[in-house]
Length: 258
Image (cartoon, rainbow, N blue to C red):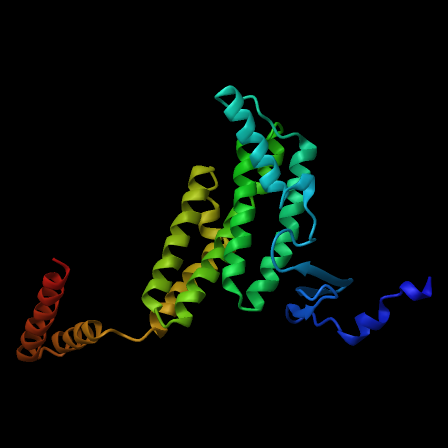
């Protein structure tokens, strides 16, 4: 029926393949919605809860529903070795994870980093749940492959929050910890060949270096740089003065911490 044709809305918001097309609108219920423009149409998502706004089996999400079932089984029997997720259960969880994926990508480009952290956590918990209880090993394999990407997006969100506060040192630390976590994942899952070829690792390592090079130096770091320059030009008198000053600052810091 012509009255159901969405072309007018699509024409009003043309798709741009060069960027992520995302915006917020006010829904007819008065609540904010997130819209993501794709080449084939527009996705509309709730800002909290399940992106599609449903409550499967009366729960806020399928993750919470199946987690509650596992908990009930464990409470009743004292163990959960015989609790399993069927292939269809895992597929349903995977579809839910895909909804959250669309939303955290949209939230990242809206610079709503707390929401990115929340939604990537949701999907990481889905992977953990399926890894623990899936009857079919292939279901675990299908989902576990996305863990490095989820970690990367979560690290980007967390580091971006600290960079907005000009805490570049903490941002760099978060990125480096993320690199270590992803490397550990590859090693523990016998995927050591990915250590050199992973685009996720490559991105985070490059970003860590960019943060390190762009962040303002602390007074102590400035003195250390000046000391290195004095040593390189063999100005040992100046180097000695700087070394003494650095030591004074470090000792003062130790006293404040003790």
